[in-house]
Structures are given as structure tokens and as C-alpha cells.
Length: 383
Image (cartoon, rainbow, N blue to C red; front, side):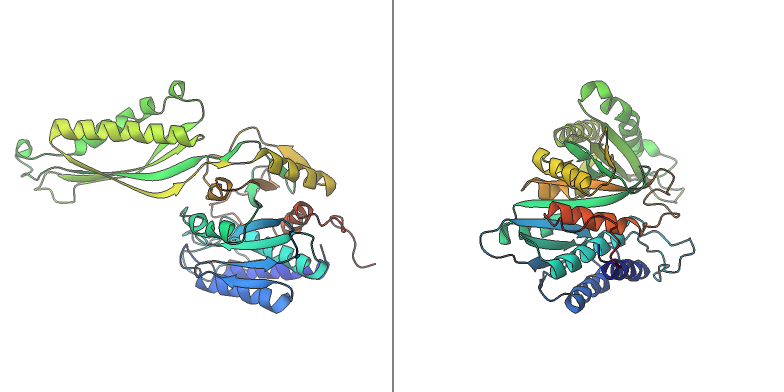
């Protein structure tokens, strides 16, 4: 990667880190990325799509179109570590490394702009990954630009530093946030028998979760995590009559996620009918399974080997979800990982920060996947 381009990409990452924005609030972030590309490239078209944008390199003719995606939203986690590029937004920070993903894609765009490519390339900068909604909206570009294949990567801690990690098949589990609202009727706290209290029904649902997720019922990993229980109010004269149980349900296979959802719903409705409780279900933060296409993930392997990078095989999918799966349901593609190191702080923690050193690795991987083979990784460009 050109040294000047790498330096600009790292500075861009620091700028983004200092101005983090939550999902659907990424106004400065999107504009800053667009301004960066407009200032430093001459052969790219910038297409503003409202919540997100993409840049386009046209090779001409009937060349295939390949897309590369990066996300740019941050998390509601305060910055507690001392960094020269520390977040300036209270309570918000880039603790997942989306600043690094976007800086990588922007650095790749600089390389393509300056060196050219023999494919049409879409540089897709996506909003709202953390809520699972961004990819749903951005997927429209696939049809609009007739994209043939899509690639993306995520930095990941707990795996070998600067090595490329891949997996066949499922890379990320499917998940969704499930809220079970149960409404009974109030009564004086001294006469609870005159009301309907949903506390006991909610307790029975929680008690049943281990059996509902028992591994002998499923082929892949299935999990259900209690994230909140909210029943009644701090009023000692009134028996609880309204409650909400919030769960995150998760599965390696989307069909088994649906099975778990149906089981939990059936139990809640059964208890509601038995006890005279009204039951309602609400869902949010819905993520599909992310399943790599075999031919595409093999291209990732080849690019890593051609670039002289360490290539490692993952043995199981990540439990965490990733909305990138929406793209892979529509067209071939793959999602890979670049290691932060086995001891590097995990993503979504106070101590985490994206490692600038892996930006070049990401750019070179993208160049390899795009067929740009003229430069080798870490070549000394000063001579």
C-alpha cells in the first residue's frame, strides 16, 4: 500500500474515532467520509443515499461489478482509556472498530483511484450495523448497480495478530431481540387474589429457557439470554399487574432460531391463557445468519496466500451477529477477519481500540480480491 495513502487512512481513522455517532445519527461521520473521498480521489463517483453512501469506480465495458462494504456507526460505551484520538462525545465511542473498517475501505478507494482496476468496484459505506438495520437498506445497491459479488471484513480480538481468518459456511449466528409483554389486572397488595399478577408466568418462562434451548433438540448452537425483567412498579400498595421479559435469542442456523422463537411464544401464550394474561410479542435488532459462499471464501484464502499473509481457519462461527448476512442472502460473497492478537482487549469493552496496523492488511486483501496484484504487502515504496 502506498505509504502516503496509509498515513491518510490512519489519520482518517483517528478523526472518525474522535467523533463517534450512534446508529441513524451518523451525520458527521458520513459527510466526513464523503468529503475525504471527494478531496483525495478523481476517478470515483460518490452517490449519496441519505443514511449511507457509496463510491463507484467504473472500469468500463461488460466488466463484472464487485462490492466491498464497511460499517461506520459507534456504540453507547464511554471512552475510558487515554488515547491521543480519544472520543469527544460523552458516552459514545468506536468500541467495535467500525472506524477502522471505514478507514480501510477509504484507503482501498485511494489505491483503486490511483492505480486503476479491471473490475467495476463499489465501495459501500454502511450505517447502523449495530441495530441490524443498515444492511437491509443498503442491500438495494446490489440490484441498482448489478453487483456480482461482495466482500467485507471485521477486526477481531482473541485471534492471531494480523493473520487473515476464514470459515466455510456460517460465520455469524442469527439473532433477534424478543420482548414478551404480559398484562394482568391490578389489586391491592393486601388482596393479591383479586388481581392477575404476571410475575409467576414470567418466572416460569425464565425457568423453562434451559430446557427450551437444550442442545439435544438442535443441530447447531442455540442460546437464549435474559437481558431485562421489568415487572410492576415501586408502589407497595399495588400488586404487580404488568411486566415485560426481554430476551436475546440466538442460533447458528436461522431455521433453528425460528424454532426457538416458536417454542418461547407457545409457552408464553399457554401461560397467558391459563392465567388470564394478555400476551404481546415485539422484536427488534434482528440479524440473519451470515453464511459465506464457498467460491468466494476460497478467493479470500487465495488472496491471503498471494499477499504472503498468515491464513488461519476458524473452527466455529462467532456467536455475535452481523447484518452483513443480508448481502450474502442476495449474492455470492464472503466475510473474513483480521486478528488484533490473542491478548488484545475484546470488542465492545472499555479497553478496546482498533489497531491501526491492520488497515494495510485489510487494504491489501481487498486489492487481492479485486485482482490488483502489482504491489506486494509491506513493499518498501521509498526506493
